[in-house]
Image 1 (cartoon, rainbow, N blue to C red):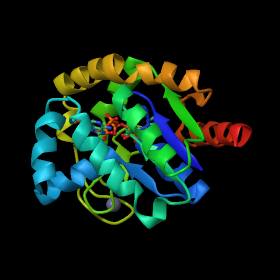
Image 2: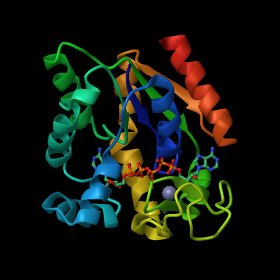
Image 3: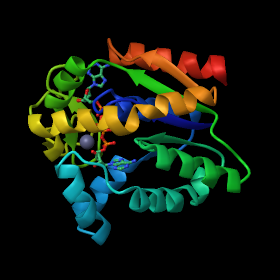
Image 4: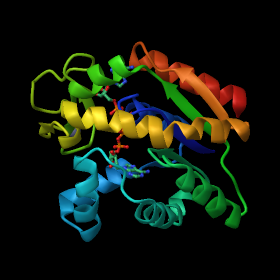
Length: 216
Ligand code: AP5
Ligand code: ZN
């Protein structure tokens, strides 16, 4: 299955992507994770991306599309994938359609995680991520047993630079201006299904998998 997850920052895309990708046995491809890995390694791509990420802005389409094109050409993405955080502009969506059409295929479904801004702010301000395994925690909603260590791998937990209040506000603005139009774009292709992404993580996963079943 070729699936896209869309939704505002903090909607739970990364959290749900892990479960859904495992359920579908497809690779999870997160552009945010790829950019953060490049930032961590200090690659030229990371140096360029960091400027935009720290300001809550999108990395330019051309850079992002080229990166995704290369990732989708890897053998593990041949039979399906779950894209988390891409596309998030109309030009990225059009580029993805073209890329897949050139490969003789297309997206099956776009799953929209629906949550309001207040919930987004609560989720992002309490988020912590593991430097070791990448697992996403929350100080209140999914708290590790020790404040700064990952229960899964013992790795150090950190707060993302873009989870500061003024950057969160900018990311929300960018989402409604640049990414929200994708809902209509994929709606017109009859590929969009929206689910309520509030409530416990497990409940959202059940709703997501039900939605895949009814459309798959
Ligand atoms: P990216 O990493 O994609 O960030 P985002 O879209 O802003 O999404 P987040 O990762 O912040 O949130 P999420 O929806 O994954 O939520 P999560 O599961 O962590 O992008 C970062 C930056 O990279 C962008 O700003 C941009 O600069 C650049 N970039 C990336 N892709 C790009 C692209 N295509 N084009 C251009 N630039 C791009 O959950 C959040 C918190 O809530 C966690 O603490 C979690 O534990 C908690 N939580 C999750 N579910 C629940 C629940 N049901 N109940 C309670 N808490 C929950
Ligand atoms: Zn870990």
